[in-house]
Length: 254
Ligand code: PEP
Image (tube, rainbow, N blue to C red):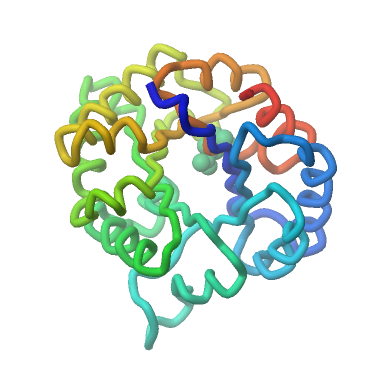
């Protein structure tokens, strides 16, 4: 449905990689992926590695993302990082509402919506994550959960902002578990999300928004997942921590 836009393949490094390790990884990716034009490639290192990685990818086709940010612009929020601070290092994307943050930091849809608005105000593209747990899937409430998260986490965005927002469908039961959603399961939820975007915004916007799949994406399953009509990219965790596996995912997605 949306293949006139390039796929976006983003690596979420989570709380992994010192600065030296991050540089090793990104230098390897630069070598492996130098000629790739068909895919937007994004790496999301931990905050501490953003300055060094930012410098290292200046002359490359790799773009920079962060894994989180504050909903506030400035002030007495100890330990937080504002959008403007990310912009200093040429960060273009920010992952918001990852299931690990929903689970461990108790992030709510309302908070994620505030962060998404703050990201847009700073011209950062949010990658807003949604997805059901195993218990929710088994209870038959996948669509209800995803609908609540999509509606709540994107609340207050204008049509223009929505167009510059990426949605990542990440079934929680598939993250870091080695279990991948089947292509049918992924396509079904992606199509459902696109239908919701049509209802919440309009059809033209819904067609243009990129909806990524995340959850144990590997070189072996990337091609089949990315071939689904409503899958416009991937958010990759574990397999983005090594040059070979992340490069192969990017190459297999073309
Ligand atoms: C993620 O953390 O967003 C993720 C999808 O992880 P993994 O690829 O390891 O399942």
